[in-house]
Amino acid sequence: MAAYEHIIVEKKGAVGVIQINRPKILNALSFGVFGEIARAVDELESNPAVGCIVVTGNEKAFAAGADIKEMQPKKFMDMYSQDFMDIGGDRVATCKKPTIAAVSGYALGGGCELAMMCDMIIASDTAKFGQPEITLGTIPGLGGTQRLTRAVGKSKAMDLCLTGRMMDAAEAERSGLVSRIFPADKLMDEVMAIAEKIASMSQPVTAMAKNAVNRVFETTLAQGMDLEGDLFHATFGLEDKIEGMAAFLEKRKPNFKNR
Image (spheres, one colour):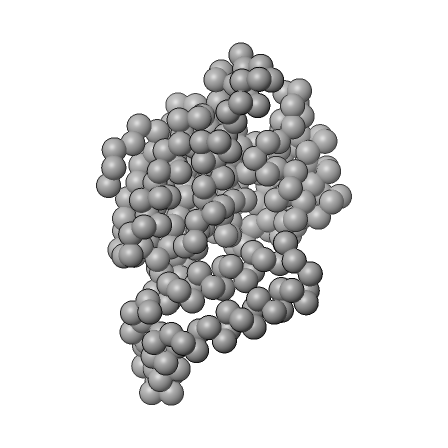
């Protein structure tokens, strides 16, 4: 694994884990943090032994927002000429392998946006989500108005973006932002079990499934159905499809070879 200053990157079995490691400032997100996360995703995505990637923080905070000390002096041209997107701030969203955000404590502003870039969010019962940029005289800039609205709908997104309030894990799950909730002391064990299950599947098939689900937000139903059909048919050219169905009929665990 490469050396990092702001994050910890580990490979645990077939699961890659990216942990934001700035505990003194509640894992605030800086240009440096986003740049390192992008490099870590590159590293884990290119590793054929990794089948799923988990992004997390610590029990107090997934990430409590952007590093305001870094951002406060910046002017329009500073951000226009190089913002977070330019340094790979959305790299998690473009990862072809399945990604899970494991969220405890605060996931606010950029932290909420980073979590939403992942394929699913699994939260502890202490998690708090929000887009409080309005209280700082600005608006979300990494998908907070876009991904949040797609996840929870217009009314809830307007509520959060215009008031800056936080919502707890239970409300986030009810709203469709969060997939599952676990006690804080069990969160990482549960997330790793889910990630290991995903990683045990055929990697080309998980990539196809992920592609099909994500395309919902960019196509009509007819176009999406065409894509799903094409990808479904493509799985019949994989050795893993043959193995998966044979294992089912033979009542045994499949031995996928990712081809």
